Image (cartoon, rainbow, N blue to C red; front, side, top):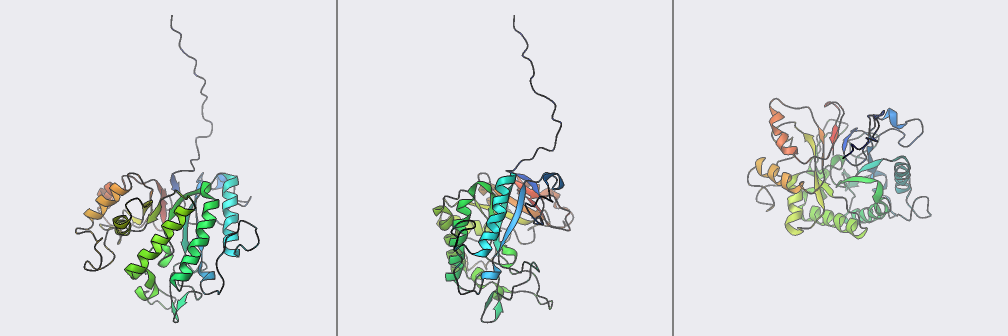
Length: 315
């Protein structure tokens, strides 16, 4: 006679199960990340933590950015400070959303006085050579902390590290392509992102590098079909193009990677790409009628949970 197996499962008295691999997270960096005065229960059980690497302080310094290990002689102070956060994440069970950026940490979205080309403030390193130096050092650091990196956003270029020249300076003047020349020059942009992918691959970093627009990912895939790339949409569900996300970036005659029909071709491409790659994003205040655009986020793996007035993010 068959017997009914006993159920050895017990009631979960703590339904706030933390999941460090995917889900909602706060769109802002945690203050005093890793400190004892900010315990897990005060973080709403978010275990994906965005921690930006602020590189403007080393823009015009005539020394290389270097990584020799945490608290090791020769490691640049900026990377050592960031590594301390990664050490804390490792101990406390967090996963980091990583993005390197060159805007002003004390005034986000504004150009730093440290980063200039011929007196013009820019949102990246002043030269390709210095940019590659930064990428090499960052790759070496990330290679030592692969276990605590959840997602990697491409960064390095443009305001907020989000591959654009949006925003305004303190005088209210809009930024222009002159504030991100390495981004708006197609060949230089390609050279830099290819260098990023190669440097990360050399350190066995398997996380996908998320691009800000599908067309940027398409550019890369055309010349490197096996590139480990993903997608992040920083104005998810806001309007037809998600405020530029599903639009082409360059003039049609300049870039053969451009999509003939936007936003539909770009959305379809993003869906296909992210079937096997990471896909994150941030919300923006939505315009009427955009709920139908849920089809554009079929494969989304993370998202912020902040109100729409403050960027929210998904993975």
